[in-house]
Image 1 (spheres, rainbow, N blue to C red):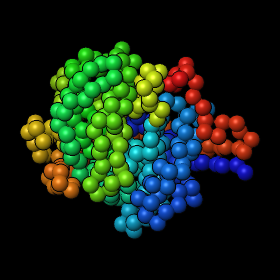
Image 2 (cartoon, rainbow, N blue to C red):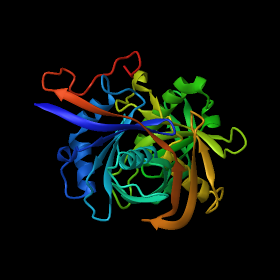
Image 3 (tube, rainbow, N blue to C red):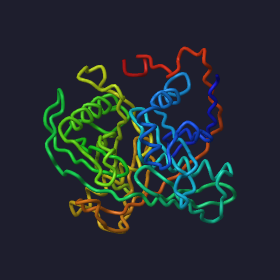
Image 4 (cartoon, one colour):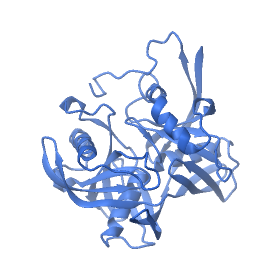
Length: 349
């Protein structure tokens, strides 16, 4: 038997996203929550196959673009990151909408196409500005974001105690300030950022359990955002977002991962929720957030709500995506690397 996967290759402000189409038969379930739970239980082999060598590389994310189970939606998505399946991702949503519109899988309407995306944490409305067959930019009206903890102490292995925020922006994040960690946010700081990010993720999941009030199966902190101030005019803040390896342990050799190449959409939502909770960001105030490639997402809070007992905000994120190619990926029964492989020259050992 041979497995064949069709993909549209794209990136959002630099973050690569492989949009897999026609893979509905691999993900059973009558609701997107059931399909996400199945993927998280049974399909890590597929996640590793797509993201690991020889088909993938450390900075790559991917999306299963599925027929929606909700008739109100145009597409369902399940996001695959190096460390986990993710219930929502801003950059991957930008990649998916851009890819499906520019390849005609969803009809493009100029000047604005509205796309409803089904995610494991709810329906997301996306507006894509379009001209001459190209998606110019994408604005995501994300699910509600909320702060769980603000400024709580976290004991980080081989570093010490630092104050952190824990927030939900489509998935759970731990956020720590670069100055508190004694690290910069320049490309030369990458190795230190990855090590600290991995240790923050390991520590926060041990010390501060989380669970989404409406989606209790979403109960881990997947991602780490190390935050900094504005680097210059026209930018409100900068960040490094760490996607830690899925093999974290007390072994220092596991304290690594990859940096999000984009400014991180769900992380921007989580950061805005924390800022709003502190009175640092008002409604309808644009928030220009820069990532490690100096590209930006522009966030905005358009309302307030509640999620369970948590005060929450309604965030939007605007960013750009580009289609970079199309591909077909093949796995033959005789292939010895059914989940791909990682080698210690560029991957965690």
